[in-house]
Length: 65
Image 1: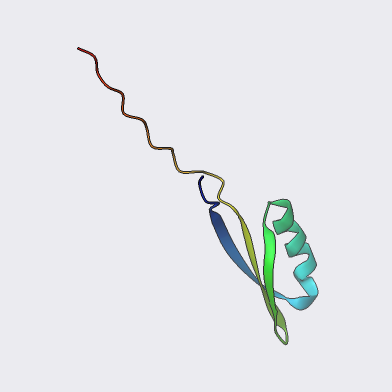
Image 2: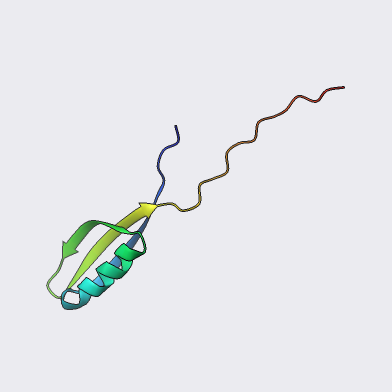
């Protein structure tokens, strides 16, 4: 079974205006996994599954003569 692959993004924003940015990223499929508050800004880290899975290895077929 293949392991889930994730991509990550971080967002640094002023505390007052972060709600719209959080909602926008949520609509794009990003899940908030961590938020680090600061005095005037905060850093939010998001993840989502990688959209393109690597191709499966092709099976080698035996050639008949």
